[in-house]
Image 1: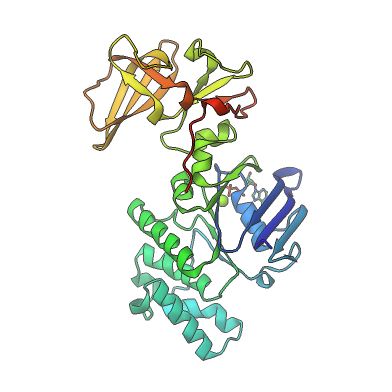
Image 2 (image 1 turned 90 degrees about the vertical axis):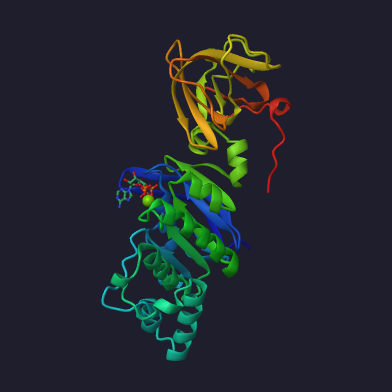
Amino acid sequence: MSMVRLENVGKSFGSVEVLRDINLEIEAGELVVFVGPSGSGKSTLLRIIAGLEEATSGQVSIEGRDVTFAEPSERGIAMVFQSYALYPHMDVYSNMAFNLQLSRFSKAEIRTRVEEAARILQLDDLLERSPAQLSGGQRQRVAIGRAIVRHPKVFLFDEPLSNLDAALRVQMRLEIDRLHRELEATMVYVTHDQVEAMTLADRIVALDGGMVQQVGRPLDLYHRPANRFVAEFVGSPRMNVLDRSVWGAVGNMPGETAFVGVRPEHLQVATGSNVTADNAASLVAQTRAVERLGNISYGYFETGQGHQLVAQIIGNTDLKSGDPVVLSSRFADMHLFAADGRTIMRRELTTPVELN
Ligand SMILES: Nc1ncnc2c1ncn2[C@@H]1O[C@H](COP(=O)(O)OP(=O)(O)OP(=O)(O)O)[C@@H](O)[C@H]1O
Ligand SMILES: [Mg+2]
């Protein structure tokens, strides 16, 4: 039995349809990430699972029980939001205890639960502080603590880290990963940050325009995107997707191919006028900019017709703006898309994918 099950869930606000025909099963202990651009329906879907929003159609079940019309408090879920409004006049202990007190848990039980959560979140020494005396990361941990003490069946996170600075975000991301493993908890996590999605998720649900575009393990989405949307959304810098004609005659390409995608790490950059790589497609371009990050560099290129491409170069490079280059890619590394964006599978050309 799945922990969370969504069947044909749809949602409209008035005449505006924001979710369509969502089918999804989340297993106990899984960390599933909803990812997609702003307005794609991530929060709405999470709020439907939480019971903060009612589905217009379809059914929501938690542990086999139909909760489509159940109150949030009856669902066994706990939600953590981006804005973790703590009670400013209460100390950390009371902030975590507050909901349990409302639910009339015994003092002893409350103490046990809060101390357990504090230990897991390394807040033991901060229980008597007020929120004003905490760093952003510590406050966010208290907000997560308020969820942990409730021993929910499912944790729901809506962009919980987006108010934190970059370094803290990385640290908290690792915390959530550790928490997930230590609690063996079922978690649904919403983000528009594809790096967060790739690093945290057991499975990713990619949403666009209120519809599920693909469900799968992170590297599945990376190596075998179902369509152009997923191909371009997952991976940074994004995949170079160009009109098929830009690559000229590439042997053995199915007739329905409309667009060809190549990831930056699969573009070889040659400064000579000849490309010698076997079995490769190539095009001529001019260097527009070079970014050197130390371990890798990114080259930005433009073709004579104004098409832009990004290539990853290992280590440093003496390439400079204005240099003419030949960019090439192996056929096997090319992603082919039909006019409607659908990926055209070409088994003989896809490299085997190592999955964790
Ligand atoms: N209460 C509401 N009334 C009307 N439209 C709404 C309401 N809530 C959300 N929407 C619309 O539903 C769509 C999906 O919104 P949602 O908040 O789920 O997006 P999201 O993927 O979480 O985006 P973001 O990354 O910006 O948080 C948007 O177009 C939004 O404007
Ligand atoms: Mg949102």
